[in-house]
Structures are given as structure tokens and as C-alpha cells.
Amino acid sequence: MYKPLFETTPELVSKLTQIENIRAQIDHGHILPERLVNLRYRASVEATLSSTSIEGNPLNIKEVEAVLAKKLVARSAYHIKEVENYKNALDYISTRKQTGDDIAIDDILYLHKLTTAGLLPDEKSGNWRNGPVYVVSYKNGEQTIKYTAPAANKISSSLSELLAWLNGPAKQLSPIIVAALLHLEFVSIHPFADGNGRTTRLLTLLYLGLRNYDFKGVLVPDNYYIADRPAYYAAIEKSQGKTYHFKGLNVDSWISYFATGILYAALETLEAITFSTVSDISIRGAKLSDDELSILSYVRQFGSISIEEASGFLSHLPRRTMQRRLRCLVDTEYLNISGEGKSTVYIAGKHK
Image (cartoon, rainbow, N blue to C red; front, top):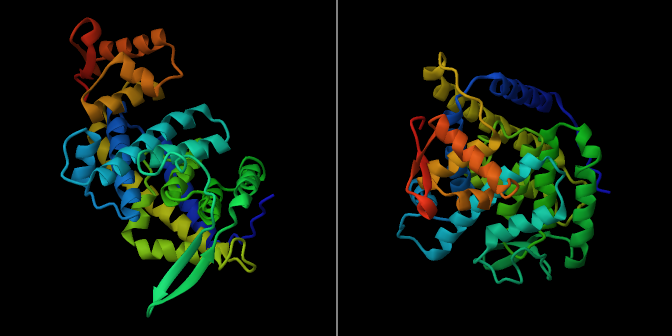
């Protein structure tokens, strides 16, 4: 089984304590449902922008918003598809974390498939790589191998060991430390031909969501990584060593870097939530379910929603239950009905 060795330093404890304090403030704070929907939408835009930008996607935030709103953008079809795919993966995480089930191999493969659909050949999207992986650098025309990932025939066993630890002994540790180690270990295994970085960050976000450490779905750690991309890669490389599970692996520096990033993102989240709730302090908002918040988020993004569209991303709900959810949102003026019969859609209501 995967058995990481690390030291819980006073500096790390201080960061974890600050993160916990911010999490407590957010968990016990009051925020209106419609404000939370807007904040979650904003977080999804920023996460999509930052994570795809790390991999070289050139779209800016206005262009990402336009793509997600299904508007025309004068960019390459490939880069637009990257953005669409990443948002689809974030939507999957939003639904998947509600189950509370442990992360499984199927989750990893599906996240990769969502992320790389239409960008990689079908045989590579959602499937392990079948060849070696080397991270190389070039200087004065000479190539140097900086890191060697495990052989293709070791991927399955390496990931099985990682998940056995993640879903077992790791539950006794701080979720921040576990998320840091999951991030480092997964990207080091490098199980896919391409798309490993995006899948790693998505998988880490899914884990944090399952442990209720995604700060109401508004946390965006990727903003910290993109703020200094060279530092992000350098932190990973420092703790990888030259080969997979290189002797003398120093994971402490990576955990410290990761915790700093989460603290940075947590402070950003607290500021955004505080700003959004200042004007609402005397207003009592209705308590909405996660399903209803997901519906409102969809309407916020695309302008309207039909029963068929709602059923597409909330497939765990029977059709009658879906109809009741929509009816409730209409009755509370979060949604209005537009059209009749098969053309019926639901649009934003009084509470926007």
C-alpha cells in the first residue's frame, strides 16, 4: 500500500489551523441561495480558466464565459473544446460529490474521458497510457530526462494502492494533507497519454468536495497555481525526484506549497462570500437543496432549462421528483415558466 512519509511542522499546523478557521466561518455564515449560485458559477468559470490556462489554453475570462454561455468565440475549435470539457468535468464533480461514495477507478477514467473528449483519439480518452513517460528539459540543444514515470504495466497497481490508502488510512489525516499527497502521487503516476494535469486537479477537487472541504463549492485552488505557474511545476518536480518513488523523496515541501495554495484560495473564498452577503444581512433566504441549487446554476449559465436538460445532469432524480423541484422553484419565484407543452422551459425569476 502507498505509505507516504511526511512531517507535520509547526508552520504546516499554522496553515491548517487558519484554513479550518476560515472553513468554520463559511460553514456557519449566512448566504442567500441565489448568491451561492452566483458564487459557484463564478468559481466554475475561474477554475475552468485557470486550470486550462496552466496547460496553455489562450482564452481569457470573457471568452471562457462566452463559451460556457454557448456564444461564438473567435478561437480555435480545440481550445474551445478544452474549456467546454473542463466545465463538463466540474459539473460531474458537483453531482458526484453528493453521493459521498469513496473515489474509485471509474471516477478517474470518467474524469479523464470528460476532460479529453474530442481532443484525444477515442482509444486514449478515458484509458491508461500504453507507453513510457519521461519529463525532459532542453538546454543548449541537449535533452535531459528530469523525471521517469512508472511503466505502463504498473499504472493499475499503483493507482489501486493509492486508492486503498486514500479510502482507508488517509481518513485519519487532515483532508488538506491528503489532498496534497493525492495531487502529487497521481500526477507522478501520470497514467494517461495526455490530460494528466487537468485530471489531477479535478480529482483533487472531487476529493475535497467529498470531504466537505471545497467551501460550499466556491474554492478555486487553481487560481494560486496559475498566479505563478513556474513555481507550481517547480514544487511538483522538487518532490517527485528523478523517478517514481525516488529514494529520499521530499514531500514536505510540496505539502507546504499545497497548503499555502488552499489557504490563499480559502481567503479569496471568504472575501467573496463576505462581500456577497453584506447587503443581505437582514434578509432571510429560503433553504434550497443541492439539486435546486444545481438547477439555478444551470439557468444562470445558459439562460433557461427544460425538464430534459435538468434530467441530463440530475439523472439520480425520478422525472416526477424533477418536476416537483422545478415547480417549487417557480412557486418561490426563483424560476418563471416560459412556453407551453414540449416547448416549456424555465427561466430566471424574481430572485436572480
